[in-house]
Amino acid sequence: MNATQPASEEPVLILGGGLMGLAIAHQLARRGLAVTVLSRRRSEAAGFVAAGMLAPHAEGLSGSLLSLGQRSLERVPSWVAQIEADSGLPCGLRTTGIVVPFRSPEERDHYPTAAFGAPLNRDQLLQEVPGLGPDWRAGLLFAQDGQIDNRRQLMRALESACVDRGVLFQEGVEVQELLRENDQLKAVRTRNAEGRITTQPCSKAVLCSGAWSAQLLPELPIFPVKGQMLSLQTPRGALRRVIFGPGIYMVPREDGLVVVGATSEREAGFSEGLTPHGQTTLKEGIAALLPEAVNWPPMERWWGFRPCTPDESPLLGASPIHGLWLACGHHRNGVLLAAITAELLSKLVTNTTALSNPEQSLLDHFRWDRF
Ligand code: GLY
Image (tube, rainbow, N blue to C red; front, top):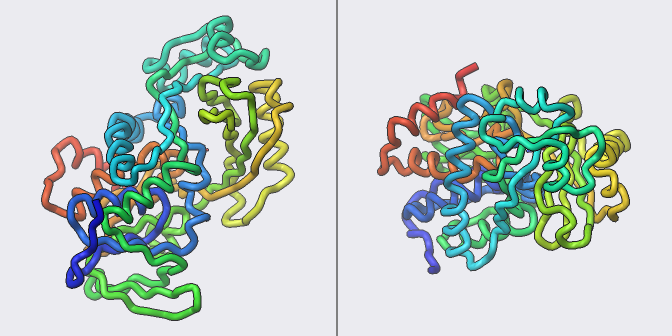
């Protein structure tokens, strides 16, 4: 279908054109709202950087973050189906399962999510991941975890689905200030690529500016954690499962590309670029995990900034400003959490479908003022 926005309706502004912004814009538009996405520089969005693991169990999440991740994982297939139906484009969802290797069975059995995985001994581990390095004596297989090709497919499909649903985009536009009166959002001040400053009236907005969110709302305890990554070309099918090792992980795409991540650099701030130390860390991680992969040709190298909070969990829901909602701080789990974030935030913003009690109590764990 092709929709256009009613000319008179004030749009909900989505502050950030990354994965979270697009996912929320799409759900709001599906619910019939006029939506405009303001995006400074799409290429810096973590949605174009992440490896796309859907891994609440393999990443060893716990507590309310695990619950949020599990709920999102359940929703991913229907969410992807909506995006694919609206866009006509594939998202690259694969239920490859994820293997987590350990140095000993004891280490394996103490993993926070061990109860959700199938325990593997060394022989079983080698059946799942032939060629795994000699240090790995035990493992867990999380068959329910998977991956999606966020960089090459999901982001493009989601953007197309948004356009199809009538979402408008302002690209190259930086939101410089949130203008409020008595703590009610009234407008946003923006600067476009030519330097023109504009005040756009706005009474409803969602802040999803990733690692940069605190630049707009300094009350938010969000800071960047840099990650450097690379991809390798392999013979198709050389790696069947995602491997989530200590230090690095390897995510095999359908066409033989393997995405390798990632450094986790808290001291780097917003310093851009690859570093020799970061690249060496990845190379050593590959050699320890899957020695033969050091001979696979590298294809591309890149970096980005995870939006982190003190407890490494997102900020979701209300903000200190009425009319402004938060969907930021997803740290390592943005791709996994996009589906549930978009669902919950679109319910909050439209305010026509009440949140269920379990949804509300789950959201309460992710209030911005919990620290
Ligand atoms: N979820 C993987 C990472 O953030 O590196």
